[in-house]
Image (tube, rainbow, N blue to C red; front, side, top):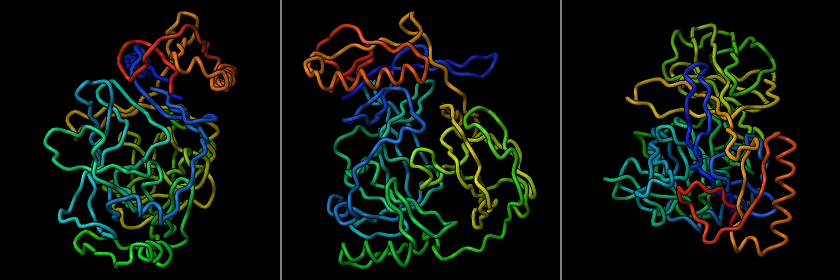
Length: 396
């Protein structure tokens, strides 16, 4: 089942908030069956994913590599009705496939272009600076940026990326975790590929235990809301005189804290050797957080959990020029139907499935009660599609 509507984002110059003013984006959620919602992100969706074994991931992929995300470039397709993101990856190890270049381009769904944003869930989500294992194949299904002759996508979807937590020397995806990167994860992958990995010595990031020279001595407040411009103050030692390549990483609310999300560009307010002040990124959840120092070579983990009861979705405009710093902004729903919410329209085929309609209406009632937004359903339309037509569609 898919829910389609489009959102255009307008910044309020007085208070910095962002509002949906025209329908235009997509996002995936799971109810009883897969759902796609264009434009709204549920921070704690808790949607179930079906696990895929390591062996099956390897078998379904043309290449398996360890790589670091060094750049992300969102873009519209040629029809300008869908957004993709081109992610530049630096390869540090090759477990499967033949790759001669030092970098490759991974295409994923979603991103922010100008004042238009597309959030997709479930999705393969990464942050710039993250390192891990990618399960990829040549991209033949999605448009890529002009000038890029070869790109990749993940046939495994959200489980196509295993993220390294260098602070704990462990690896995670949205379902699983591995106790040690080099002694547990690597041998399992190699046992399924039946070949030793090729190490790119010039690019490889060391995976041994790293001594956490920085120390977190405290933080306040101990409970804070994410994505609301509230400021967290972290105190300690040896953070570095300036931010440099350092950052703060929070438990990821979208996977129950199995991985971490980095503070966004513009979140950091101040950084010194003994104190960091920042706004908590909207994807952050309750749990311990860690700091990488300004060399990004050493880290410190908080001894106590930071409590985040709830979060507001933020949007961050693409920087122009890229060196510019743009702070994330909160979004606001707008009254699209004149009755305090959004009116959905059934696609003809979906309208014929009474069980699917009943499941959707149960979910809609729950959303209505929880969000106090007047979601409603009215009418039937044929041939629903991902087009910029002003309709909010429910379809397969």
